[in-house]
Length: 180
Ligand SMILES: C[S@@+](CC[C@H](N)C(=O)[O-])C[C@H]1O[C@@H](n2cnc3c(N)ncnc32)[C@H](O)[C@@H]1O
Image 1 (tube, rainbow, N blue to C red):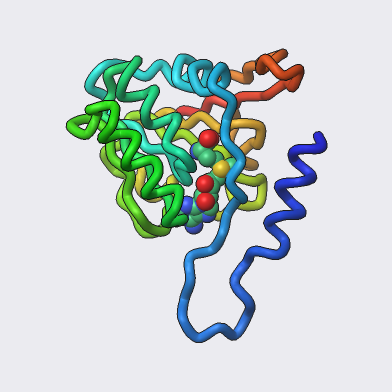
Image 2: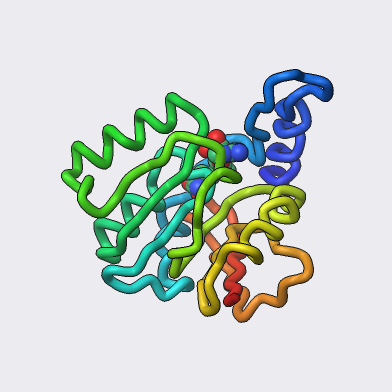
């Protein structure tokens, strides 16, 4: 609960000021990494299979993309607009020699094409999920799975809800699986 409040508070100061001339990407969530045990559970819940295409919207340090490519043998793409996180995650992908099947796009997650996705993962805020939802409804092919960490998509009915009781640091996490 504290973490959710913290994320919401951080977001409040980060949205581009109204009236700004240059259209900047909207910060949909602060950087807050998914614990590694939860990363695996998200990809398992999303039934990610070898060769499938997955996208992590707001990929942070690239951990979900890296596990998707390395352990699940998927074709994994992250989108991240923070240049430091983009550089760090891209370097880690290179260091782990995963660059044939994993990559991080540097840019706004609203500006990408997800029509080829078999699985989408998100760890954004509830109001951000509301903003992303129309884009996903428009772009995603039938049968694409979406796994959201901690926050639901309003108006969508989850196929499954899974609780991770302890992430190793005593915190619990809720995962929501949707199928388009
Ligand atoms: C809560 S973190 C989640 C990181 C990663 N998905 C994970 O679960 O470990 C949200 C990430 O989204 C990124 N982000 C926020 N708004 C974005 C936007 N409009 N375009 C691209 N990335 C964005 C932030 O920089 C941050 O790294």
